[in-house]
Length: 610
Image 1 (tube, rainbow, N blue to C red):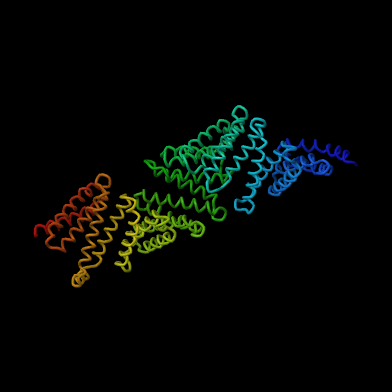
Image 2 (cartoon, rainbow, N blue to C red):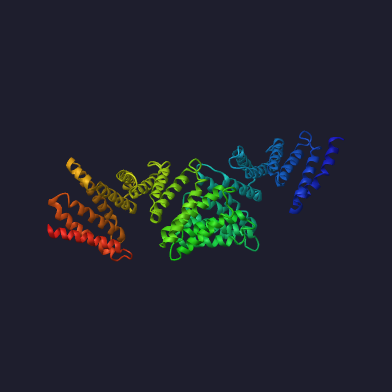
C-alpha cells in the first residue's frame, strides 16, 4: 500500500473519532476511548515524514482526548496528553501553521493546569508544571488576538486568569492583580447577553480573586468581591444552578466576615445569613467537608457578635464548632480538628469572662482548658510555632483564672509553666507586644503564688513586670500600661508586707530599712502613674482601687518619718474617702467598703493623737 492509499484509509478513521467529542456525559468515557483508538489507528498511516501536518493534528487531537478522559488514572492521562501535544509541537512551526500551533499551545496550557490540580503543591514537579502552563498560554496569545479570534483569545485569558490565581510568590498582590486583569479581559467577549453562563462563572472567579487580594484597598476589594458574587447570582440561581449558587453565598459570607473588622457587627450578621443559606445545598449528608467548613465559619462569626444577645450567640458558636467536629477528627483532619478545638476553647474562655454564675463559669473554664490542651496534640512548636505559643498563653490565662474556684497553688504553677513555654517563641525583638503581654501575665501569676519562697516569687513578679514595661512604655499610656503600673505597685508593696515585723526590725538595725521605704515610694509612684490613665468617669473601679492602695501606702509610710507622719495620714484619709465614693455605689462590695472604713477610722484616730 502506497502513501496515498494509506492516507485514504486513515481518513476513514477520522469521522468516528471526531464524532465522539460531543457525546453525552453518560457515555463520554467510552466514546473518548473509541476516539483515542481511532486516532492511534490513524497514526499507522500518518507519519511525521510523509504527512507531517496530519500527523501533528492527530497528535494534537490525542492530547485533547486524553485531557478530556477524566477517570481514576487522571494523572497518567494528563501526562499522556502533554506527551502527545509535545509531539505535535515538534512537527508544527509557528510560521507554517500558526492557528494549529496556537491551538496546541492552548491545549498544552489546559492540560498542564489540570495536571497541577491533581498534584500536591509540594510535589517535586508542581512548580515546573505550572510554569509550563504559563508559557504555553502566553504563547497561544501571541496568535489569538481579540480583533481576529475573540473567542479563542477570551478562553485563553480565562485559563491564564486561573493560572495566576494558583501562582504563589513574594508579591501575591501583583499576581492576583494579573489574574483579575485576565478575567476582566475575558469579560469583553463573554458578556451577560452573549454568554450568560461563562459571564456568571467569570464574575464568580473575579470575586474570588478580589477576596484573596491581601493588600492595598482591602475594604474596597471586599466590596468589589461582593459585587461580583451578586452579579454571578443573577444567573446562578438556587433553582437553575444550586451548587454555584451555594458557593457564591459561601464566599460572600467570607467577604462579609472579613469586612466586620472595619464595618461592624451588621456585616457579621450578613455573613451568618449567607453561610446559613449555603447550607441548604451543602448538607452534612451530601457534602460533609463543605458542611463542616461552613459550620466552622459560622461559629467564628457568632463568637464575634457582642450586645444584648451575646450569650445566645456564644451558645450558637459552641453548637457550630461541635457540629464541625462531627466531621473533623484527629485521625482524618488533624489540622482542621485542632483549629476548631482551639476556637471552641477560646469561645469557652470568652464565656467564662462574660458569665457571672459561679458553676456556669467553672464549666466554661474547664471546657476551655480541655479543648486547648487537646489542640496541643497538633499545634506543636516544630510545626506551628506561633500557634503553639499562643495556645500556651491562653492556657496560662485559663489556669490562672481557675484559682477563683480551686484556690489550688498548683494551678498557678501550671499557669507559670505555660507562660514560660510561650516565651520560648515570643521574644522582645520579633514579637514585642506578645512578649510583653506574656511577661505581664507571668508577673501576675508569680504575685498570686503563695507557696514556697514568697519573697522570691514577688521578686520574679517585679522582674516580669519591668520587662513588660520596656515595651508598654514605648507604646504610650494605655489600659494595659495602667494595669501593669497597678500590678507593679502591688508587687512593691507586697515586698514590704512580706518582710514582716521581725525582719523589718533587723533591717532597721542593719541600715536596710531605707530600702523598704524606697519600695513603698516606688509602689506609690506606680499607683499615681496608673491614675493618670484611670479616671473616675471612665474606669471608676480601677480608679477607686488605686486610691485605696495609695491610701494604704501613705498609711504605711507614716511609720517611717515622724516629721512627715501627719502629711501621709491626711493624704491616706483623702485617698480612702475617694475610694469609698465609688465602692459604696457598687453591688456586692460590702467587704471592701468595710475594710476601707476600718482603715479610715484608724487614720483618723492617729491624726487625733498626733
